Length: 188
Image (tube, rainbow, N blue to C red; front, side, top):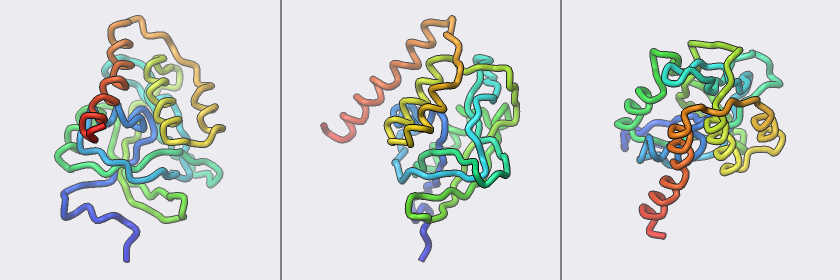
């Protein structure tokens, strides 16, 4: 019997979120069908903030392949509807700075799961993330109880204040809206 959840009947797929989409409220706004499956690690990769955004020019996250067995990226597997995957591909900029990559990740029970994720194709190591983007990543990391040391590494990343204050406010409001949508969906 396979460790993979049955996604074929429901036309669903497994998505490995490791950056801002770890925050459920952010992902839920983009992908209403998202269901958290489990926390996982992607080995031989490092979390880096060096993907150039084609929208705002700032740095976004990348799961950078290092080949070193001592490196890993923490993240979350979400089960999402295929109809939403195509939408997420567009939002993430597939073909414009990100590419889709099939990865094997490992959960806390040492089960290997196959999922897709996005990896950077347009890299600039001089860029910094905006403060609100870094907050999305931190919110997701804390929400899913990633290791304290890992959260500290994210927190140590130097960020820039976004001069577009309306965008920054809109981005952070996602978390309030996401919490309300979840409450409405769950009837709480």
